[in-house]
Length: 419
Image (tube, rainbow, N blue to C red):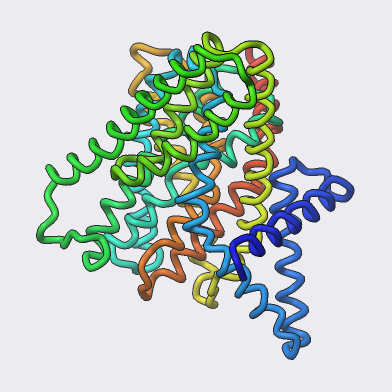
C-alpha cells in the first residue's frame, strides 16, 4: 500500500473508533479510541482462532507493520505533538516550577531507569545492560498521554504545570539516555562497545543533544517570533508555525541534536512570547484553534495505533508472571523518581502533600515507549521488552489515566478533612 492509502485507513479507523466511543463508551476521547481499537484487535484475534482460514490476523498484522509505528512517531508525529503541547503551557507558570521539573526530567529519569533496569534483569534473567535499555525507554512520561488526561483531571494549576512540564522535557532526555544505553548493549548497532565507551563521550553526547536541541529551538522560535511580529496575516502566520514545527524538527535530526527538546522550546516561545507580543487577537484565535485540531487528530491517530500494536506482540506462557511484576516495578520506580527530587528540594521549596502521589499516578507512559521498543535491533530479548512495554503502557493509560481525576479528588478531600 502507498503511504496515502495507509494514512486513509488509519484516519477512517480513528474516526470510526471515535464515533463508537462517543455513542457507547463515553470515555475521554483518546482513551476511548484506544479502548475501541484494543477491543477490536482482541475480537479479530478471537475470530481468527475460531476460523483460521480467514487469515484475518495476518492481514491486520501486515497493515500494522506497514504503519511503521516507530518511524511514524519518532520522525514525524512527535514533533507536531510536542510543539502543540508546549504551545499551550504558559511559560510564566513553567518558570515557577522550573526546579522540580528540571530535576525530575533529568535525575528522575536516571533513578527510574536504574531501578527498572536492575529489577527487570532480576525478574527475567535478562543481561543488565539490555534491561537498562528497557528501563530507559519505559521511564519517560508521555506528553501526549499526560496532556490529554490532564484536561479532564481538573487538578490545580501548579501541579498540572509540574506534570505537563516534566512530560514535555523528560522524553527528550530519556531518548538521549536510551541511545547511550543502546550503544552499550548492542555495540554493532549503536557504535560503542563496552570496552570503548567513556563517560566523557557519554556526557558530550548528552550535552550536545539536550543543549543543542534547546538552543536550536530558542533560535528558531525567536526568529519566527521576529517575523510574526512584523505581519498581520493569520493564514500566513498559521503556516509559519507549521513550518517551524515540521522544518525545525527535521533540521534538528539533520544536525544530530534533540529534536523533541527543540520542538518543546520552540513551542514554549511561540505559545508565550509569540502569542503575547506578536499575534493579533484574530491570529491568536486561529493559531490556537489550528494547533488544538492538529493535536486532537494526531492524538486520535496515535492512540488508535497503540491499540492496534497488539498484533506486533509475541507473548509466551513464561511472560505471564513477568508482565504484572514489571507493571509494579515501573510504579515503584516512578514513585522514587518523583519522591527523591521533591525531598531533595524540601529545604528550599515546600510542596503539597498530594504532589508525590499525584505525580506518581499521573506519570503516564505512551506511544514513545512503544516506538523506542520497536526501534530496538533484533535480539532474543526484543519480544519480551516489547510485551513488557505494551503491558506497562496499556495499564498506565487505562488504569492510571481513567482514575487520575478520582485520585486527585480523593486526596483533596483527605487534606481538607485533616485541615
